Image 1 (cartoon, rainbow, N blue to C red):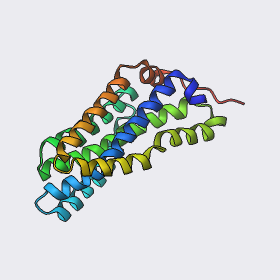
Image 2: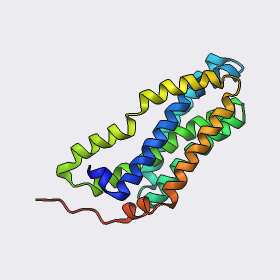
Image 3: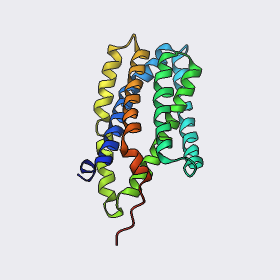
Image 4: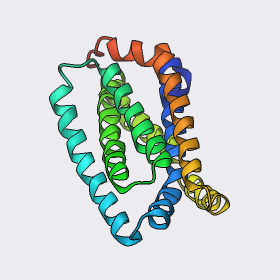
Length: 201
């Protein structure tokens, strides 16, 4: 109720849940796309997964290097749009392994750029004595749709088996739309610049 009653947290949480749902919708399709379209499916998939792991590490390093130099809202939005555009839209449009490698690394790195500032905002704006319950509810609301999204994404992957690239582009555009809500809403801007709550006795 703390999350749902607070307008800014509600917007941030709903956008995060929407992004997570769209992300999981594309997991099965992305795997099938790389295997089906790549010249050597197994090799392409393992290479893409390695690029994703490397991107996650680089994204974490970027957060550490930029956290005190770039505003949280800007860093958060950069990460979100990089992941959506380079990680979904471009790879869906261009069926080439080098593009997939860059896109996979950008997807994972963008997630780090998004999650780092977002987590910091929640930690600073939620009083310590209620962080356990609020963060638990946040995870439930954000990741609860995962199983449904994975199942639905697999089914949709079969439906669009001959057009997986287009399916991924559509998901990426939907993510951009969610990002547009984040970028234009007052929620992220005001939460990112609000003073840190003082510890309660």
